[in-house]
Image (cartoon, rainbow, N blue to C red; front, side, top):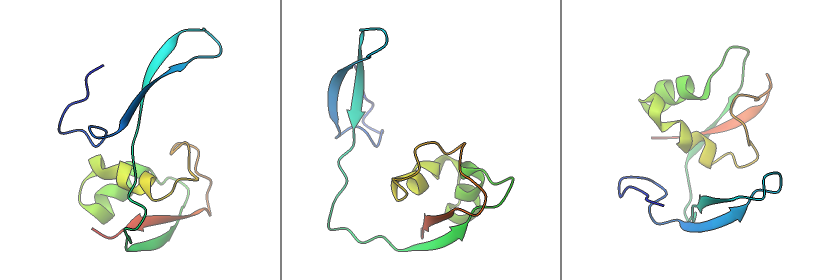
Length: 93
């Protein structure tokens, strides 16, 4: 498995995880998050029609930075299933 040096997963912990359905092993990389870093953020209330990449573009300057929003919202597992009215954190750039 190759992880590019420019990837945010480059320094992560790579492991083979067994798929319970197929019995096959897949590579997975887990990122290490610094525990003592304080992140400045704003609270944002999700409205109908929002998209995580759109919010990243508006608040962070690029839709490709959507993962920064996901990083500080660990309770959100699927950015396509965020319900209207959910309050999420958006990091200040």
